[in-house]
Length: 212
Image 1 (tube, rainbow, N blue to C red):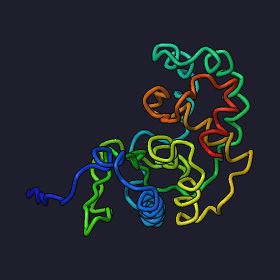
Image 2 (spheres, one colour):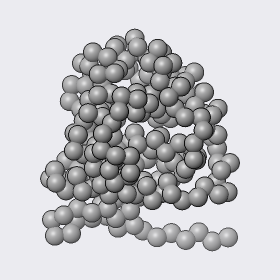
Image 3 (cartoon, rainbow, N blue to C red):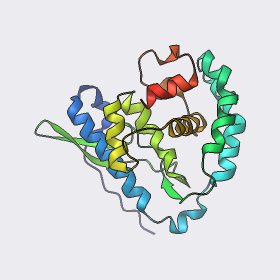
Image 4 (cartoon, one colour):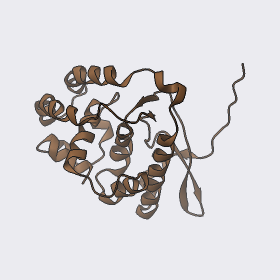
């Protein structure tokens, strides 16, 4: 048995995102959309049985959702509405879908970039330790929260290059928000980088801030 290791060039996007100019950020978000689309086009093949299986995984996340967010100190408005919001949103998550390889990790901690003549470009992606098989939208949550931070131009950039259009419908917003709350590592305080979001009046209002 052999293990072949190659060092990827670049630095984490997290380490430089704060100083990247907005036009370059838009281009990088477009690159993330293309990257996700490329990975999601790959055939699942023998990875179909990769644990956890989506249906029981989702059921477990629903069952433990309130306890998780209570333990992590989520804002009162979120805890107050959480059970009802998830109950209404869960049926919007498709039970029949084309399974794709999910990383859940299209975040600035797992994306590498390099600077070329003052312009940052993607150079790699790391950490597939949490890969699983499921619906494509589960992978939308990382870039939406950590990177877009409520900026509509950044949201549109990855949506368009991924291929889901440029506008977010109310149903999409509710479905994505439900998936965000049910994510394996859901932690709004760390993930949502919109200043003052904790003062939102409702989960629906927060979802509109994340996906304007």
